[in-house]
Image (cartoon, rainbow, N blue to C red; front, side):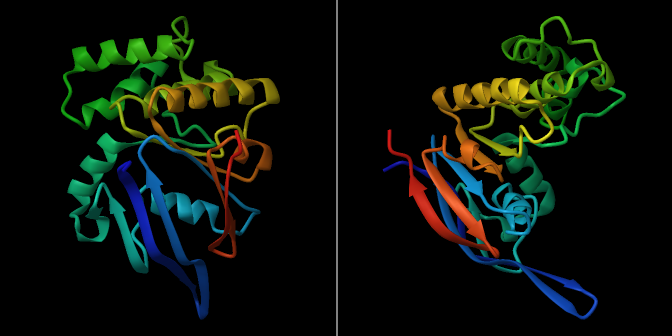
Length: 230
């Protein structure tokens, strides 16, 4: 049986805004298996961003349990969770989240510094990753010297820095033109073909349909799961 890498069990996330209680997630249940390509799709306000934070172990639930490789994240010290998350999950964000004062090479090198990898080894791997995403000639450019598509490719290289088994992409084409978006999706699908677990959070049905499993989110709940027919 394929290993379950992330498991959400009856996950609730409740926010209190003054006297108002907002149930961002209401009993979310989802198992993601090693090597899968899973998409989470839904309209604005459906809970996609909150579900991404939960799946990515960036936040803990108000109620319920999240297991990362069988470990309940609520029972981990934040420093231990950060280390496990840093090794296990690579994040690709809609707004790229690159550090503006660093070059592409430095942005990709940085996550490895937090995993006690030597600078020499980290820079060598960063060069290899930037070459892999087609940016061998842009390594020493800062984000404001790169197009949106190039910045997103830097963020994909950064997500791969610690060779995580899981890639979590949050609206990765949301700020890109259609040609750049297709290139980014091709890169992500190639990573899945190479064995990575790919989780795509999107509002675009066309992108979500490319996944092996599509989870439709509405009002903080998964209301339908569809398997792709190949």
